[in-house]
Length: 302
Image 1 (tube, rainbow, N blue to C red):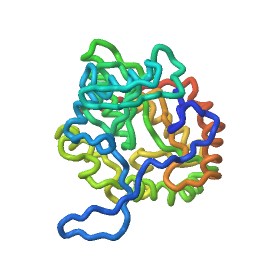
Image 2: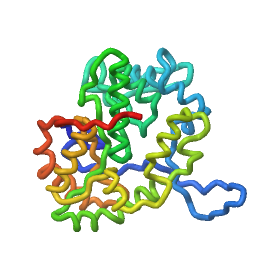
Image 3: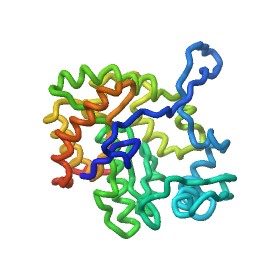
Image 4: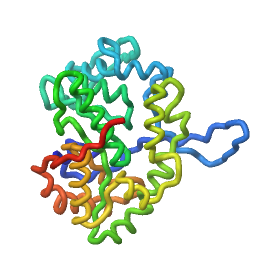
């Protein structure tokens, strides 16, 4: 398995420092709803560049010049600064720095919460697909969807093309790990990741089938306890032995070979983050460095 620390994969020996990913804005006024409390609203790509949500679905998966994929690829292969003018996006000044190490371009990874069109597009282009913030049973189904799409495209998907974006916390005992992680993890899912449906999935942003699929497995939007998240396999919390056993079980179930692990989450402070990173590096990673999925009990995609 390829362990990749989330957030800063090129700084593998430095602690991951949380960076601002959300802006605070007043809660919008809806008929019959009043609130004076501030709401954390993560910015979306269509909001930041002024696009209609229905158009962004085409920008993510449409081929050729002007698409988001074209813009992303060109910014990694051309020396800057340069301007970019396409069908969906226009930027007067683009200057990627530092330059990617890999030539002619770095590997492209595509994250999603289970969009069928995104999975199909990633498989057709042989991009690594990363599943985010979902119960492990759903992760297994989405990965099988990727394999099915790869087979339709004429090749067999490798476990290296599947990445599970997960959260792991390690302490000496299961009880200590649950106690220490509880307030910080619950703050993440119940406050920091809260997003109204009209912000997460605005009309036109995704198709109906994908919307139903994502809403069915969505772990935010309703109160969640750390016990709920552990039981569903959204996160792995426990002693070194428990974490090793669960990570191996989930790797075999879903068939992934890359663990994109968040070692800092929610309000977890610096000292606990450093201790968690050390525990994962010393107690978990050595057991998975050369491990591949074993006897995968693959869940059928529905």
